Image: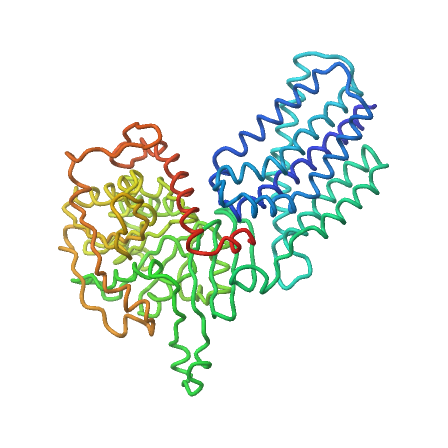
Length: 573
């Protein structure tokens, strides 16, 4: 075999492997979230690939007959990835949990293809060059791993996402079927360049696979009618799910909800509504957690600015931003994920043209703006560069807490971009008794206390039991010393925007006692798994120590959300 033919076959097999491993990843994230994928998956796959490739390359002889059989098995596993993933997720996912459930799906889908591809590559190089040397083996292994990584991250991820997810419904092809077709295409590629006799078998296998794919059609799974739009974006799996019977639409991110509305058209309630009443109508949010931060407007005394401006870090479906626009505030928004912005506009009625939206990392935006106010005061005279009267910080996604967005250094930057009498609202979700959330709250409160500021915190529901995890949503309200104590004026009818949920959520009845977070004599909370004491504050110097706790928080949130919505909704994408 010539070197050129060997290179072509090598690239074909690595491309097929990249398609298969990324397909398995797409099947894992919607059901199990990103905890497993973000933490251990790539390391496990790379280690397995390295181990088997090195082992097979070191064999004296790689049988041609065995190679053909391995090719058949590789094609089988790659084309039935969606079928295996769906059935395994449905059968054991709930009992195994987000980590072991995702691992079980990977074992049945990606791992066999990794082993089969390792054998095929070893066959290629044993035929093209019989010489064995340690240097040659190492070079082949490292080159193969690197090429696979490039194919998956730079080519397959973009092509597959563009093919699988746009306009998912009411198309005849579901996402799972599109994954099967894509895997089949890559299987045909390796058949063409290596074993043409297996083309017919590959076609038969993918046809059977398509018939075996469980179809998720409108009205088919759970209480939701269907997915209107979905994609794999930089923050995870995003999907817009609607149920017309309940007039409900939600935006899902991995195993969590970014927001949603009960969206009953006003004309069906009161057909005699005037055009002005229709224009002022606002859909009802589905959870109080999405509107509690709107109480930032109720803090008194209000900032002295003539026209209040607000910075919202984390858009969601635009619930808070839309409310602030309706109350006449000048709204700036920072959102990391461009697809979240697009879905908020396309499906949730967010008026992007009325706000100033910046798509970037929130910490980078805040730091850059603070740097401008500190080191370039001459630029702060610009009309479009004013300190904010209100700042809403809401960056929870999929149950994940990004520690880098909660460091003491970030809160110092926030104080630099706030008006002297401005107000900050920080949304906190998860187990409020966990060491990570306690350190998070302690860092925020202590950062403002150190400059003479004050904070108060409220939760959306009372704690159920002292011994059980304290899952709840809370909002911290903080202001600098110049603003005085945190007090709230009574909410009024205009604050509710015709929403019954807002009327309840803006009462702010359940307050959290914050002094306990400032008492340095309090016993330090220990990590239950390692019993190692965590630092009591989050800073850039120790933020890495909280990364594992963030993954643990995501896994706990996964279990919580399975009680919020039916399992069929999650496993059905």
